[in-house]
Amino acid sequence: MNPTVLVVEDDTALCELLTWNLSAEGYEVRSTADGEEALLMVREQTPDAIVLDWMIEQVPGIEVCRQLRKDKETAQVPIIMLTARGEEEDMIRGLKTGADDYVTKPFSPRELMARIEALLRRARPSLAGSVLQWGDIELDATSHRVRRGGEPLHLGPTEFRLLRYFMERPNRVVSRQQILDGVWGMDSDIDERTVDVHIRRLRKAINRNGDTDPIRTVRAAGYAMDVN
Amino acid sequence: MNPTVLVVEDDTALCELLTWNLSAEGYEVRSTADGEEALLMVREQTPDAIVLDWMIEQVPGIEVCRQLRKDKETAQVPIIMLTARGEEEDMIRGLKTGADDYVTKPFSPRELMARIEALLRRARPSLAGSVLQWGDIELDATSHRVRRGGEPLHLGPTEFRLLRYFMERPNRVVSRQQILDGVWGMDSDIDERTVDVHIRRLRKAINRNGDTDPIRTVRAAGYAMDVN
DNA sequence: TGCCGCCCTCAGAAATTCCTGAAAAATGCT
DNA sequence: AGCATTTTTCAGGAATTTCTGAGGGCGGCA
Image (cartoon, rainbow over all chains, first blue to last red; front, side, top):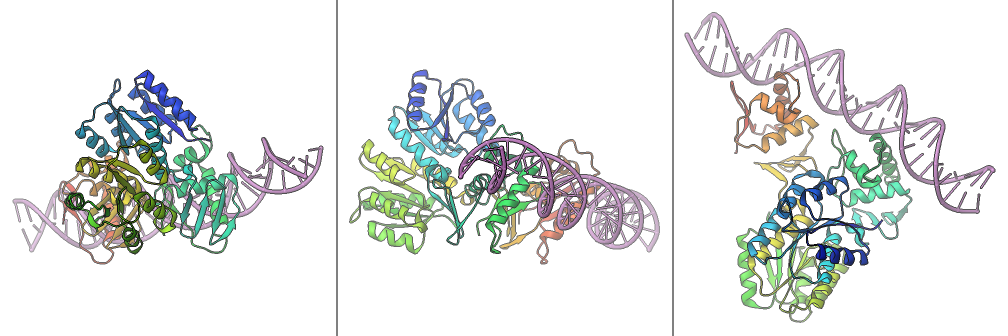
């Protein structure tokens, strides 16, 4: 289950170079040369990060960026923009539009790799192997261990993924469908009510000692994990 | 309450330039030329972001970065590293050590500003918009929370959508039909009178403490939410 | 193979919210 | 002041949405 990176680049040689490097780093790579198709691919299966060329066919990169940011589903995807020109204006426009980072060609692949890693560390902490925290709850993604107030908690696999999903998105209301996509996988064909059940199981496992429940149900919207 | 940025830079001229630019952007700025002192300042009052020069007195910037990342309290603070040399190795070391971004001198202040903004947007969503405001009412669309004067308000789904609808259109009179389209959906087949009821429920929920009513009824036209 | 843990589904109960219609109140106009 | 129109109030039933407990099924492991 490696992190997925979507490369949107119409220079075939560069695209292959990136794909090769990313694969070597252990990323799952998908790629396209077309902005329109990129949007479709993101909607179909949200990647963990996007490397997006400014100048691509059909739709300019910045427009792709804007579209992604506009849609709630994809608004949080980390985006690194790539450009040939060193225009300051472009860079600032790109960053203001919602890109997280901006790299000008020519660039060193290693630099790009490092920037992607830094960005993932920030945007998806569990992918970088750090420990997530919420109040007295600690979740270690690499060792699959969860503690509350120092006491180890026993969670099933699904409960673990569910908790991680919430801890990666503190304060954010997510719909059942989003939870299904994120925790079960995009193509899962599971009833939304099932989420309720697992939320309940997770709650029971976490609040065993009458602790405060970190998970808030938002009627007609979904659930959220609030900062305390 | 503006976001606070800590500038760690021993070149006095550059430090002043940064301070001036950041202040102009509305940031609260604190600064020091000394790495040791920087660590103390962070511990005393955690800033929302740090601009950190690689070459500073006493402690090298990368060591400051490492120290900050080691401590749980400060592990999440966004860090942008600044350096004179364009050495690729340095950049990669910096990013691997936990820096979020890495800018080489000479750089444009505007670029740095844009990068800080992008980083804050990622690290502290609450600081970078997404919260609508009207006087003492705050509405956070992503966490579905509403506060008035700091006190949390409990709104039902429809009331929430209704309030958001108004706060997205300050100072604008909207007809009942427009409200139905925007809040209930274009194809809703609901009596216009129903809007009245929900307006009332919303008012009751919002003005619980005898606060001023933000919603103005416009006879024969609809409703509006005025700026205060 | 048999046990065990976990996952998904189902369906009824419970809780909350929403809508409806009509009456009361307020407003504007003559 | 009196009338007409519009807005607000109100309460109960309808409709959603969520919660809960139980049960079958699948797969891992001894």
